[in-house]
Length: 342
Image (cartoon, rainbow, N blue to C red; front, side, top):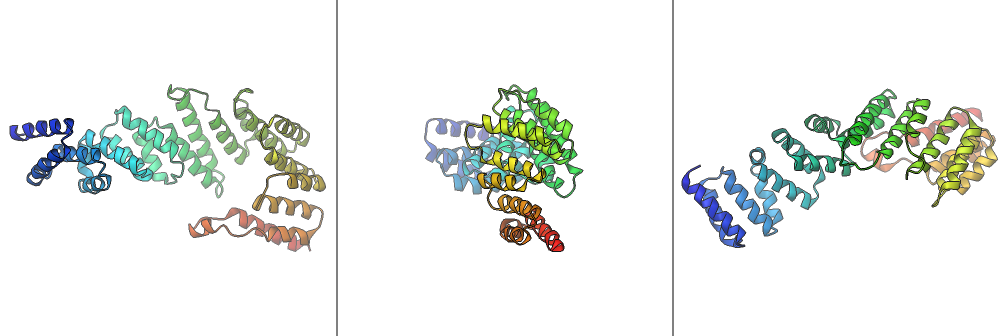
């Protein structure tokens, strides 16, 4: 850097500190025309625009420099703040993750990387998530998001649940050894347990749920999910005992728990009790129509069952985004089964 440029940069920084942003911007623009690739002048102008709250102008200005920004850590952090101001979550994830390739040991960037992925739960781009955990192997939130991606895959290919469980295990391991997370990650035990239920690993799921202490905020969920497991393995007495305990402990709305109790009676072929609990529950839309249809099918009231199933319509969001509507397909399959019985 020439002595003239160095002196100019020092003078501009003094003007910024003194609050004379207008003069600093005018001088900075003059030197930027002469030295358009000088990142020190780019940084100075960026600081001024940010301080003046000219965020749109700054966004356009920084976009001109694209890859060059990564050469200057201060510019990286300033652009990150700008993206946070606009709440451009997708851009933050990609930008910060790429920045960590250049500055892998920067604690501030690593924490932003973890927090952003953790809060931005809609990330479904597996390639991006794989890149995130490759760049920052300690990003537990990245592994959690990957687990959710593989849970979605599991709806079409059950073998994918094993990969989801593996990602949950890695996230649990990281969070238990990280002082940033104060408490036992019991909510991850619940998500892992649910994935184990889907993969039909029921005993392992019970063991996972039992890791949740009885005094934990998630203890009621543990009891509920264990009731579901015992229903699935055909131990209905134990399932009913647990769901009644969950209903007794629930301090808010037990209507969802009554829906689960209805499904236990459904499996026991006590269809009248099942319908009674479904009507007491909060079940709406697909849940209410499908479960009541199953009970009516059991009672051989086929026309009524089909009437309930016909209430289940295509999910427009899934159709628009080219995704499989499993609930609609399940309802249609049951209609066909009932028609074959008539």
